[in-house]
Length: 86
Image (tube, rainbow, N blue to C red; front, top):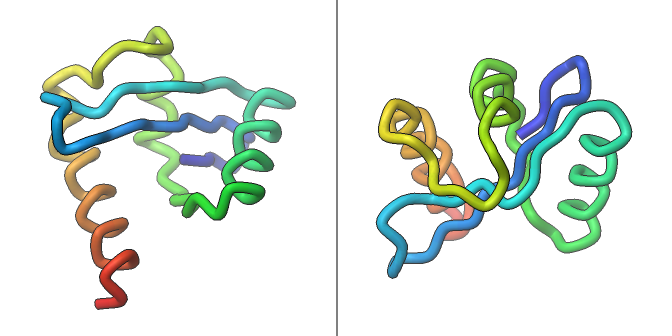
C-alpha cells in the first residue's frame, strides 16, 4: 500500500493464517524502500491512502485487527483476480 505522502505497508497472508500479518510499514525513505522491494520482487502495489494510513499505525509482525478485515479482504480479492487474470 502506498499513499501520496509516501506511506507504505506490506502484508503477508497465507491460507493457513487466521488473518494477514503486517510485515513492514513506514513513511518517507522507509516507504520508498518498501515500494522498491515490492517492485524488485514483482509484488503488486495497491494505492489506498486510507488503508495505508491505518496500517502504518500498527506494530510490525502482528496480525491485522478485525476492524481492518473488510478493507484487507477487498485488497486480497483484487490480488486474487490479478493472479487469476480475471
